Image 1 (spheres, rainbow over the protein chains, first blue to last red):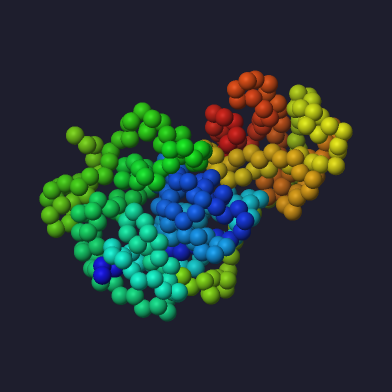
Image 2: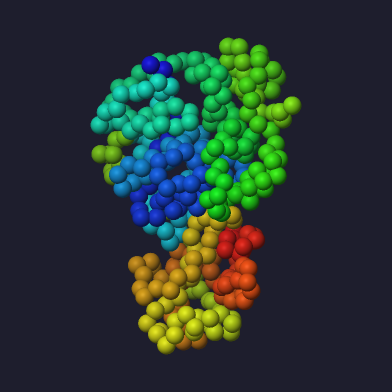
Length: 217
Length: 126
């Protein structure tokens, strides 16, 4: 079983306006468990997160490096909405599995375009079977972008292979005008591609291929 | 996910902007439209709020409500009760509620001196 521990944060949101709040600020239609992207007004990425419905609450799982940026982005916009955020990162670990993972009561498993995302309490022993190199090599071969590598604050979702997370008809959110214009004019700039070898602009290097973000020929 | 411990995690402190006494104006055209909407019933109020979202980050939220559990300040303008949530008062102080009568893009409009930018449809601002 191919499992790798991610460097992730877990935020727990509660309150009746959670989903509406998240939907109004991110690129995908948020009406249940899904993956979405928070963007700035210039459509550059703040973070890509897994939105996971947990009972009456909503968990957000994102990349640790971008946690504070996302918290600042969300915090100033709650205003009169019924949303309470808790940081439960210290109680949980997050893994990605590229194979089926047996369900159990104490772990949360969601299927995403990257693989299965597993959120497990610290008390649950899950062993990473992949090294970082093996994880990255798999990503390269499967063209899977990852935060801190291809998914960074200097690119927009179309640059790094997140087209599917930009909903075409959901309405306004921060960055929407730019992304919609790019898509409607079919001018989405550079894109994520897999190339042979290790070119100078490689972002992630695998055994035989690399991931780059460049203008396609 | 360890939700047994979730409740023990403290809530992240929300940035609470300073509450200001909001001053609002409503144009004659908007008053006419409100009169049409409310009729003779003045038991309801116009809630002028701000939600997250929209192209620019904040969206106006106009509702006719009987009551609300949102912490609000109440104004009376031309005989209409107007409720302004305290959490949004800093964004709404000085606004003008107008009504634009046109086939496309018409309806109530907010002119907001606090907005550094707004989107084309006028519903969203930053």
